[in-house]
Image (cartoon, rainbow, N blue to C red):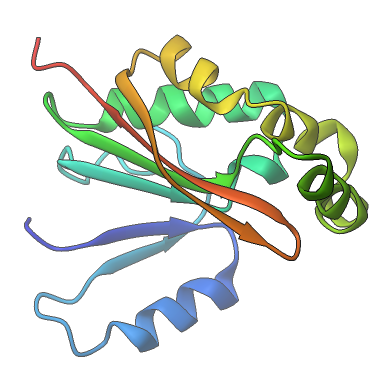
Length: 153
């Protein structure tokens, strides 16, 4: 399959995604659920996986599990892209992050992101060539776009 595959635990989010992509051919497939080997077992190994604004909302163990699952599902030579709250490098951005995201999602789950742990967790999951390719300062903190590769071997 050369199409798009998506998974999200929020049924409303998947409905919105289906509506926004209805004109695409082939139509993307969306599942309501959590990324796990059993959930996506029937999907082909993708060349690219994107994880967007998920990892800051889950605990350290779940962050690591999701990244391992992505590594296992990704085709050899594939790429992982993570768009999420990353390291909050300035005092001002850290303050904004504390006053917004950490108030909503809790300090325990979000602190590893603020401390810059995502590249470390990506490396531990098996990814290489990990690069921060962009950062965006927002009213709620800095969002980073990270890219990592899975070797061909």
